[in-house]
Amino acid sequence: MISLHQSSMMWYRMRSLIGTNILILQEMGNAVTSYKYSFIGLQLITRLRKNVCVSELDDTLFFNGLNNTDIIEVTGNVSSGKSLLLANILAKCILPDRYDDIHVKGLAASAVLVNTDCHFQISKLIKVMSTIVTDIYKSVDIKRMNNETISKIVNDVLDNLIIINCYGNDQFLLTLHTLESILFRNNKIVILAIDSISAYYWQTRENSDIKSMDSYVTNLIKLIQATTSQYNVTTIYTRPSTVTTNDIKSIKFITTNIPKELNYIIHLFKNTDSEKHLCLIESKKETRIISFMIDTGIIKWITERD
Image (cartoon, rainbow, N blue to C red):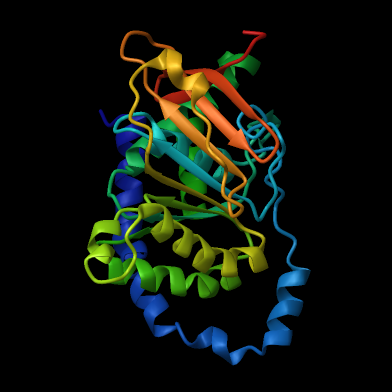
């Protein structure tokens, strides 16, 4: 008997063998296509784009609101939940708003994931989406919940996620330079996710004048923002934490001056002594600390009302 999870994985792998693996080759062949468009014409096209609004992506996490051109950094130590949080956000992005008369509460949009660390697993995303849909059906009408329906909802939206696997710095930079071609051809894309942005820092440092990781990341953000700001796409990326403390009690004293390029910095802290973990969120206006739990593969925020 093949399980729901195994069925979704088999379907996705078959699709990947046919299409996803040649995406970079397609982009290399089409890299010069965007230059055929005049600057004025391109500006007009991007102004006319009406992207899905990301403001309702996660009210708890983005408490000061979220705009379609915002840039978000997710940082934490190893196994703190960075890739899992990314999977939660991508799931919410590509899931439908409604399925029949059930309010799934997704954005029904598309996303691009640049996978550099190879830590992101499609199986994790499928599990997250299956759990989200299952929980919604349980809260509405458990009698209507069945594996066939959940599998159909999940499989139907997997095409909304473009995954680009990078195995070196040159391929990573090529991907960033061809983003415009990808975004131009798909106006449903509202999120660019990178896991992680600092994967090739040490490789780059050996062959350049860049010494600090912050400078390296800032340069990449500027390159990315030149494209995403025109196409109204939100960028969210992961990177290792610069905070070395393991003392949960000292988290409230951690503050940084959020760079002007960023709108949110999300610090994840895994508590080895409890099932409750901590998340410190910095925005331009304020800093908040919220707790979260990892339940059946998804991140669940613990608010005061809980």
